[in-house]
Image (cartoon, rainbow, N blue to C red; front, side, top):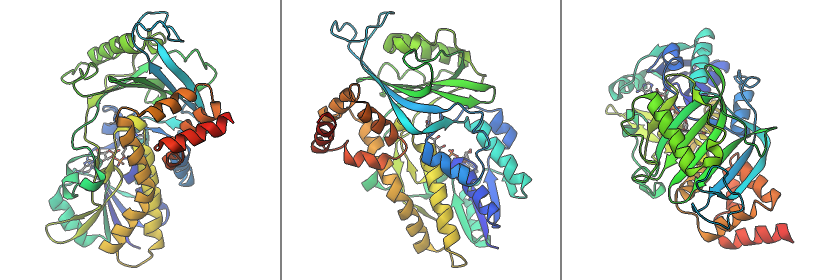
Length: 423
Ligand SMILES: Cc1cc2nc3c(=O)[nH]c(=O)nc-3n(C[C@H](O)[C@H](O)[C@H](O)COP(=O)(O)OP(=O)(O)OC[C@H]3O[C@@H](n4cnc5c(N)ncnc54)[C@H](O)[C@@H]3O)c2cc1C
């Protein structure tokens, strides 16, 4: 059977490794950390995954945490108004800015977030228990040079780490060359429900114009159900204050201070929270980047980049793990249907091009959401408060961002869509 090396044990690498393994391929998986190190380490993401991406895990029968993880049934949008606007419809009882927009769209299929510390550690153990060769080693380019001669195919699924340097940046698909948001995540226990819909969970997107965004979502972490408070701050702005904050308690205190100031309606349900664990915080930033999919090694061998290695979007739209799952499913099918033919450069390019058919919509939408919204998008988001079908459609776009082509980017299409709804 064909020998395949997968470098990097994240969402994409593990999904491909487990999928190939179940088909009888001889798979080696290289990870720079053991399962225990991942499980007891720092959180890595907020990893909210929608129906299509979750279905790929079900198809491989590796949805081990589905019954325990909270079911996220909606996506809500709140927009903060100016601090003292008397015309704001939803006044905050605690002072601070009000909400000028506030709605929740229902998802056709539920979403879930399983802490990657839980999932990746569990999947690594499953891979090894099923007889897979798990090598704990941080791969360098020189290692890959050697392995590309001994394996039929080398896949690089090492996320945004140093190995990306092997893959040329695709400037035509990467409009930004610097980070567009400063990221700060805190996993907490003790968060109350949103009073507007206490009967179901939703990802709550809170937009603070000119300042950034706060995302709140439930997750399953190492200590059970928790909620994630995730600030995305415009660089240099008032949310860009987490750099150099090393103490997790200080990180949480800062997170809550910003909640109280910019999103008091979310602060109101966060007054009793505490961190899930000492590894429950994360901060950082990166530039959204699309890369050329094939890496050429010094010895002439070729490797194929996977998921974040080749298409890394800002997490503002919560798409990276979804894309990693979709990329893994697409590559898996391309590998299996290729049979015994060589995995040459043409096949690698075609394999990536097939994935890009899906990924391009994610990149286009995510990059659009990083800029201040044009008037027709503001109208759409505003109208969704009165038009439930528009709220639902927006929410379901998180599952399939290609639908935004039909009603989001062009003012004419947005106008026609809204007119169609109002008759
Ligand atoms: C703050 C934040 C919030 C996010 N929220 C969401 C969200 O809500 N929804 C969503 O869908 N996405 C979200 N994402 C994005 C998502 O987490 C990533 O896009 C996704 O994990 C990418 O999967 P991957 O398999 O490509 O890479 P990764 O998950 O990064 O996995 C790569 C693995 O390779 C390992 N590795 C690195 N270098 C080497 C090496 N040299 N040798 C061996 N192993 C190596 C790493 O340790 C890691 O385990 C978020 C990201 C961030 C930063």
